[in-house]
Length: 402
Ligand code: GFB
Image 1 (cartoon, rainbow, N blue to C red):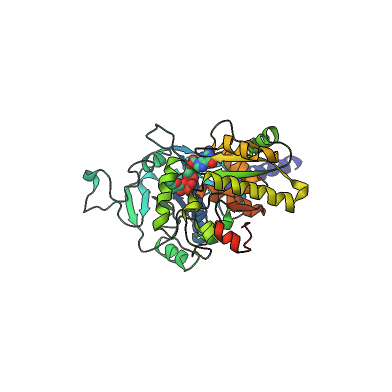
Image 2 (image 1 turned 90 degrees about the vertical axis):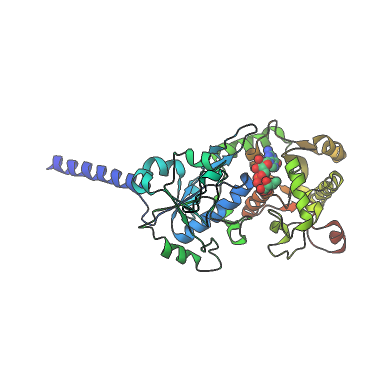
């Protein structure tokens, strides 16, 4: 009898293990959503990620976490870096169901998304750069045409057998009953996976989705590396993190300021409807003098308002010119040292900026916007270069902190 009881317990245990393993990687009957983060570099992809996460939740489909798409100088094909190299997967699950693309492809795709059923979604026909591929009889998304489109799906050996044009549906699930329309047109039973040629989200990120940033938490590796850099390289005490976006691509991008209402992430300071003003060039490319002036003013402000937590150093993140010499000279009389990473690392720069006591970023840059959102989620203060406008600042009592 005792022997039989033990045997039954053992069988129960096995059944429990099997069912929990299936539960973890079992198929989601509500379906999945996958997309290529095919537009822009990290800041753009992060904006798109938040929108895609909100979209997947509204459609009640599991979001397949795409790898980050990176471009290295001199390489013709993008590199795909697993999502969880930079960010934890678990905290995202507090908001909605997610699975890494590797887990989905290696464990579930054979059953749920067989090769013969892989359909790519785009709004309407996308033309191929190779003219011979464009057949008027057979419109196509050409989802793998060009870089990073091809390399992205190739990472998981994905080919598409067909295209689906979803116009006039769109992704704004906050201001209409769009989610219900998607569900009605593409039910999970017949469409287990919706695979989008580009992110099902807008750029810049919709206001309603900014708060989802709190679910994006740095991986242990980046948490440790940023803490270690701060501990080993910065003097004890508070520090200001600054983002200087000044490479040649940025100089060119800033030329569009004069004929735009908005540029890239500018709604983060000007408001989505320009409630806080129109675009002006200093917001995009502040002069060296203006940067030094604003930095000194910020440091003095903190000295007056928070005498117990004086600023002792500045950490500079930049895609090009860190201005270490100029800033060190300008701040030496205030006893402030100026620092940067020994080697270029856009992700470590971001993680450190997120932890600074004060942050001054570039309002137009989506790279700065990532930092601003992360800091907002922790209640840390952020400011922008040239904002508010110098002459407005003199004539109003607008507080610089946003
Ligand atoms: O992230 P991102 O879309 O931001 O692209 P913007 C800028 C890229 O430049 C980052 C590098 O992903 C980094 O690779 N970068 C920028 C930096 N700032 C830093 C920094 O402080 N440190 C390091 N290490 N790297 C816009 C795009 O970039 O630029 C537009 O949104 C367009 O699509 C335009 O390409 C020219 O929003 O700043």
